[in-house]
Length: 93
Image (cartoon, rainbow, N blue to C red):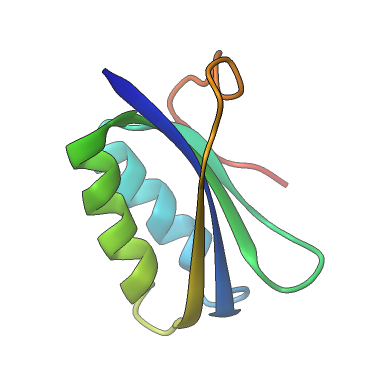
């Protein structure tokens, strides 16, 4: 059964390739979702897929891209239907 979560990553995560690497990892894990910058300097990820793959993606989020500095990661479970219609894994602007 698929799970869907919203992840907010805080720290030095904009302008350091975080979204690019998140998209690569999401596609590698065959997850559906998107990643985007938020106005407050954090990054938002909405992702859907099997629990074990989301757990692997969360490991990436806590570590970050090569030059990112992750300070805090918030994870919120999405209700059924909130992440329906996601196709592939993309960067949103």
